[in-house]
Length: 282
Image (tube, rainbow, N blue to C red):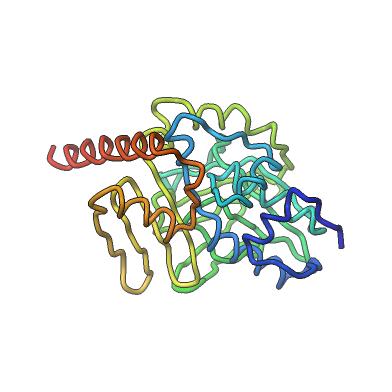
């Protein structure tokens, strides 16, 4: 086993990993489950105008301190952690789309594959509403806790793959089979974290996945997505209820936010919520 350096110590503690880890299929599955349960998909710092860098070591330290991120942070940091533990990890340029028929790849997602136990797996901690456990990288459908996912080659498996999640807001994720580096995502990260039309600028979002469903906070609307019962949602009424959900349900520590930060974040959430309500009346 490769010994982890100090930058991963807090990260491992947050995942509940306190014993030495030997790479295995079971270990990989346990790590992804823990990551999805304990490290939220979130864009709080982007909303506050201070987008964090996507350097994997920066992300690892942030996760250890109770923060989260979006795909470039989550999968970037997770890939580095897995490598430090001795896993064979490959990064890929990917893309998520609202249109399930799109076959393009614009680089707005970092995808991971991991080879262990003689098989390759799609490993993703950065979709927010993605699989709870890794998916074998082969054509076919995969059911997990009532959610159905499908993988198929994209212009041949040597060229890439398409991941389908029919119930998701972004039901398709395409990725190239060719290896990528973090530098390949720098320009898209800059755009997604600063451009006025970016969804990460327009709307605050937090997601957390567990064995039975997905918790989603979009603005002031908190939802629980259960594949059997369907979505249940409610509106968070005030800042106290909002920040309690962020910290208590999603596990995003808030000790890095000043009172001014909280006020600014709540004001942005309120503004976006009012705009959303107005759009529903049109």
